[in-house]
Length: 157
Image (cartoon, rainbow, N blue to C red; front, top):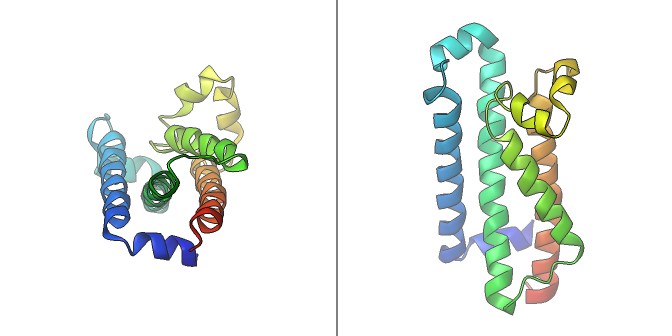
């Protein structure tokens, strides 16, 4: 955690994290409530206030973690001239994929999951797809852990 805070204390990396987080949050909001046939009032009416608040909270958390993760990767790249992640590369790739799939409306991502044969499995999930957002947060957390560990070792923070 101290490595992440040390990196984010530098204005360049903090700005990158903020820009990416805000951009992804706005994109999430637009894709979930603006460019769909269910604007926010209809979304609340269809899914309930608790589901809507949970969707917004998890989507915002994914955006923030993605911004911090990207900032850490850029820090590593600029301080060493290479990425050289080894174990962390798989974690970064998995978290990026999971974050991309889970960033939108949980109901709207079902067609994307159908490409991987998981569309029908979404109907069996008890929380209507919010599990995907939770999985994305876990994957981003693991990725952030390995990235910060790698930055700490390499950059001696």
